[in-house]
Length: 97
Image 1 (cartoon, rainbow, N blue to C red):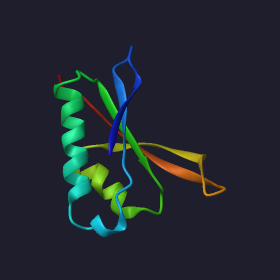
Image 2: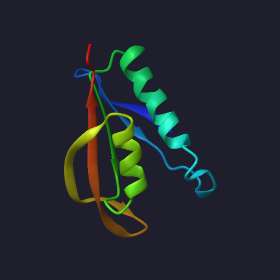
Image 3: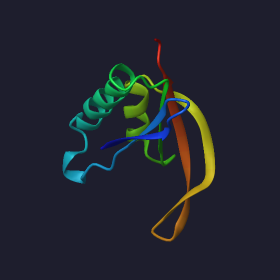
């Protein structure tokens, strides 16, 4: 799990995670991403936190919507993973403060 600032001037960051298969389905990704997003907004003063997932990864998309992120776009051929270009679903949440 990581929270990485992507644009300091605009107070934006991105959450990334790749949990081991052993930990899938236990709610850990939801709990950890919720904590990272809260930390980003409350402690770092971020305005926006974003994340992405493979369109076929329904569980990851569900994690991102559970923590309050909303669909923000779709990128075709966005990342090369194991030699193949893959699409990404994009999600984002903005600070209420």
